[in-house]
Amino acid sequence: MAISKKNQFETGAEDGNPPAPLIAITSVVLSMALIAVGNGLMFAYIPVRLGVERFDPTWAGLIITGLSAGGLAGCILTGPLVRRVGHARAFMVLSALIALSNAAIGAGTYPLLWIAARALYGFSICGLFIVAQSWLNDAVANAIRGRVMAVFYVAYVAGLGVGYATLAAIDIQTAAAPLIGIAFTALSILPVGMTRLAQPPAPQAASVALGRAWRVSPVGIAGMLAVGGLSMAISGFAPIHATAKGYSQADVALLLAAMPLGTLILQIPLGWISDRTDRRYVLIAAAALAVAAGMLAIGFDGGALAALVVIYIVWDGASESIYSLASAHAADRASKNDMVALSSSLLFAWSLSGFVVPGIVTGLSALYGTQAFIYVAIVIAAAFCLFVLWRVLTTQPVPTAETGSFAPMCAQAPLPVELAFAPDEQRDS
Image (tube, rainbow, N blue to C red):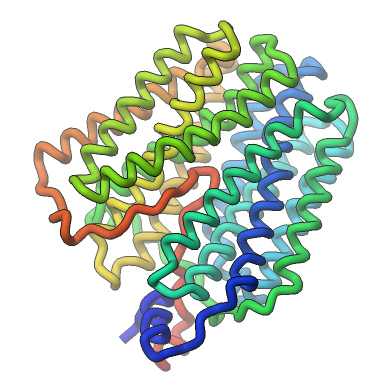
């Protein structure tokens, strides 16, 4: 009978296979943290540079939509790439494509080129996360898997924050930001290029089965659909709107650098509570908090930077918490045989929403102004809150004793995906 990679690894661990060396695991985490620095800087740089050059904010929105379209393609095509060349080579290929994307940005302010470049980035970063996380999942024992993945996510979020903050120290009218992005991407290849971490067997593309995943966890799929749009709307359009409102380069850098703090501050207590009760109650609270923070963002829009920083920390943290809570809730309801289809379907739902919502926000922004993203985010969070409340009133919870353990995650870092073995490897299993 076919078994998932995760289950096969669990068997191996019980049979006494030696664990992966800590330094080898650290190489993958360090590589992704280095990439995050360049990624955070580019996220902040692009809308500010376009604003300085007096391009219409619609261009920045189209660039976000292109990035999301690339991410959707990466969700589908990474499996075949890894099957062809293996995890290490796939990691280096995708990193090289990110460097190429940054080089295109550095060539000059050409919005059409930037759309294509960020689509390439979206494809590559989604693929990198699938490669890195499936690699780590294969390498670590069950006893420490949650802690390793938590460190992985925190390292990436910290790298993003460093990248965001770096914007304040560069000359926005030069190619310094893309060059720094290229440098950090190049550095990220070194730890993986020299790692001795054993590569997992060649996988197939993970199968996407949205109907099956919905039957397993409607709240999990709805959560991914909600947070894919929320994350791209808030993180993608906040710097666009702040630039359009006249905030300085340093102000935008501070706002973006502060936002990841919400993810780090809110997820741990919310996760702790969710491990001890029906996670859906905590999801309702997180969504309601996101709605309230969005309303405050409207009320204080264009006001004192200090107030906006606090509001956006809470807003981003509440929205990002939906990601990890919905993922944990879905895992609670899934059997081992469901995990491959479920994890890939959750990623697909996240990517699909991350593609559709920025397009909607871009269109609305052209009509009603850049603040449209705030209203869209409020509607998404409110709709998800009401859906989960309806599920609580009409279905039974998973018994607390049967739930898994919460692990902090970031919606800027796509879900770990269980890549299925090739047919011949499955028969050998």
